[in-house]
Image (cartoon, rainbow, N blue to C red; front, side, top):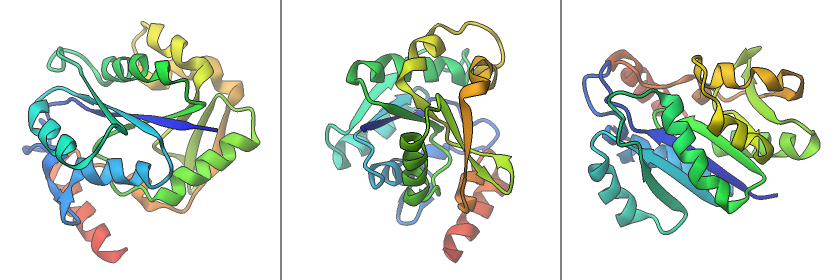
Length: 203
């Protein structure tokens, strides 16, 4: 089976006080860490949804990556929510006809490649439409979705984001137990970023 991903990095980073995708981590930027984790897990195509300061991210992407990264824009990033960016990304990646698609924000950069691989293995052993990693009994990022629900998600027009959009597939949603604390670390605030740096020094 073949896998793709939609990574959303269009927001203003308002709570952080600094621009999250370009913060330094492990000798590169946060967004590079996120992308590299997916690519190491044999994800063939990543659609990266940009908005605020997107041109700065673009320069880095085009200097390092080849056609495994496709950049698209949410030009209404300042007035729209994350679900809007997800839809833009899904609309772009559906043309590649990948079997499974990861969906995640760009500010969760410490997910281990083995976690993506474990989710892929779970996907291939079940008939799930949505798979979540589960850490100590709690749902984490990123969901891995079956291509068969892409059109439904693109056309979903209710409030509540992905959480609400996934509800019709509750009976076909499964959970994959993982031991990767990186799935729990995003960087919404300066304290989160400090915790992320400390975590990466330990692994």
